[in-house]
Image 1 (tube, one colour):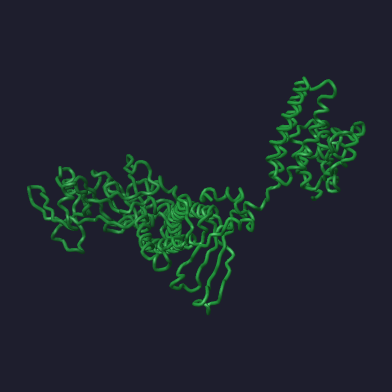
Image 2: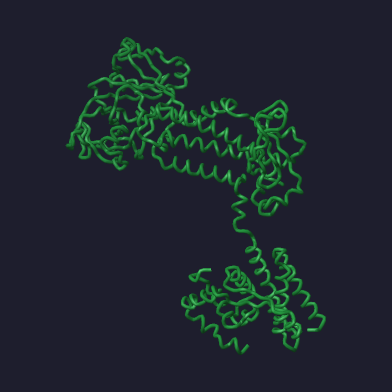
Length: 518
Length: 105
């Protein structure tokens, strides 16, 4: 190498070290550079003793200099205060969002784990599908049993109807049900008398009733009929064991396989039933009358504009039968309906418990940039967006987490808890927003009482709070007056920033960068 | 720094090299074969943990030899204790960096 290239090489290495030194904190930079310069001098002497620098030596020296970057980064990391991130996070919008996200995760996971909540969410708001009527003879009294014979049912079903496109039949009797796992109530195992609904196999499908733990095929399987247990019977006699589904029990003189469990309170038709035996129409014996449920066609729905409609049916020999069709469509609000109603109530009640303003920004002379305004509104929206699902899941956890609550009581618990959580959640979101610095969105701290209450009308009396970043002072009047009715922000001059540790530093900027453009 | 501090193998080699008399960064690099990007950051951490301390050479000595002054490193009492613990943990440490070699440098 020529002297000129040696000089260029030396210059190159010095430049590398100076570049690396830029990563070192300013206070340590001079000493750090002095050490590396001295070491470089020795490295160069060691690599090129007398015959001048070779390319191999050059590579070695360059590799040595590149190591300075790692050293500089290491020193920069060491000099960074360790507790600063936590301090910067305290009171910041990120901390608030993280708390809310944690609450949301906890409440939603709990809702997923609690079986009562899962079952409730799987139910549709309508217990019985729309467009269904229960048919009975017009001349029977209100309290009289609905006596439609199976023969009549089969006749209607076999004929093309204008107003109905589906029929189902059931008859409730008391029969013995037996299986080894079914107790008789006195501790002995054997047969017990149950309220059995002998039903056409399409009953549940027509009614649109939910079936828990349902086997794929609810219909009869060869000689073994399908049977659906009521939740009450499933809990009482099978210990709420999901594996009970699939077992074969004996209903009367027939074997039947348990194909599912009907949720409690889902059965809204006449007759208290412990078990539904699903039979093909051909096997429904003609011995006793029962209930007929019919599904209306669109023409039927148009004709049925009241809860009750008179029906004329033609029997064998063109005889006319006067019948009445009662709508059995039931509706209950469902968890979403209750939740939305609670939100509406909370929004209506909110002005009664807190001021709706977000702080006195309009009076002050300080101009906010559009990005600052956007950040403030985005933060408020984020808080409310997280709050709403928290309220939903938490109210479900409270209402349906305990299996002993009956559905009506659970519904009221959900309504009250949703309303309370929403109301106080909204109140908190607004109060929290009012106490956040408009510049960096940190919570103001260090409250100091200024003045005396007795001098309210002569001088100022109230509380002053300060932004941890040194951007603002918040004045809250102790007693609202006509000239100072709401809180006011005082924007501090940037020359004050030296008083605040971490103010305007890169670390704080990192923490609040998502919300503030300051 | 507690005596039970467990060092990495690299940090233990650097401590052993310092104890053997290799008292500045480049000599430790040469002795251990570790690159500068490993040796110097490790020494920063050891100094932060008060296992070693640094001291600038007197300028008069450097001037007399017509070279820049160097920064020398030395084990502290805690560093010596930690090195003893590390030698038990890494039995080959003394063989890798024997003290005799330093005397010949």
